[in-house]
Length: 401
Ligand code: AMP
Ligand code: MG
Image 1 (spheres, rainbow, N blue to C red):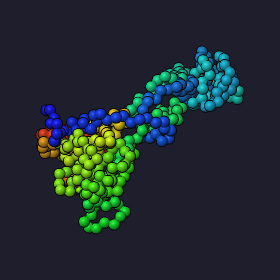
Image 2: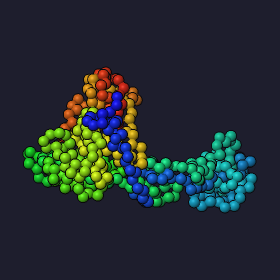
Image 3: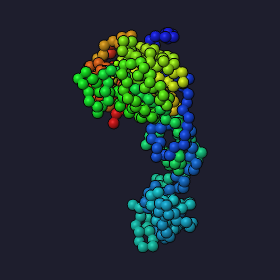
Image 4: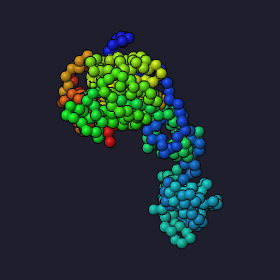
């Protein structure tokens, strides 16, 4: 179905419009110790073999290929970091330890097959299954591409980067995201609030997600429902993206879009055929900054952050913006979906080795406690028929600790 040029569009179309023409972040040299969660701007290429020498896989004795059992003269020792430098002749053995360089032309007899007797060692007759040697370059070879540009760095990939000996990596600059909570009733946690006021839960949650997805969060003071105040709050902020939350809809007090129009906002997305999160909008300001407007209900704000903020931040850094999807079996039947794609909050468990999703019975998007207990979002396509217990559904796992 072709998408209309304005008005309500599908999640996929909205995401495509947001990502279209997004300029890539610049890159910067960054030390390995500050690289976690960041994205590579250039591939990591091995500059030498790993391991850089034939290494012993066992504690035991290195003996020259040929004679593999009987009595051997122990002529020295090779320990990790302290190789045995001389050649080893047939009938000689070198005491060796795991990770130590194996002398040229040797294999390693495991300690359990040997009996040491002063300057000699006796190796029992055996049919050796392995040389017990980790070959030079057996892990990776010099010149091999170990990680591609666009790879996001976690502990495992940092281990690979560090194993090459590089301590400075070329990374995408972190996109800067100004976060503005709006609403007459919104008060920062830690301040006093009347019974008519609500603490800002979205601001801190979005700041945490921005950091998780490699960005720099710039939290702003919450703004009242006032066009001038909203425009002033973001006018001078040095950032790539202005992320607003609340006031996104069409009510008398939903003033974020009109406020940003004063700064030259050009809308690419007006509303999305999505539940929760229909009022989500996106556009560009006259100065090139992007603006993403999320609805204020906490579940709407965070679902939309997963669906739109995450791909924006990853694409900016040159990483794959696709939302990772898996499947699960439903632990409860679900009604037919309406005309809007529905992303339901759910708990995951396992049953006979299969992943099982239990969507919460109350999907009200204002419920913070429900969202805080969710492990995943269940995606129900627009117009999907009712689903039965045991049916397979698509899920997106939330990153929970
Ligand atoms: P709005 O999108 O401004 O119409 O707000 C929808 C609902 O979300 C209202 O009940 C607001 O009080 C609530 N809300 C808006 N912003 C926040 C926020 N930053 N933190 C928590 N709740 C919010
Ligand atoms: Mg509001």
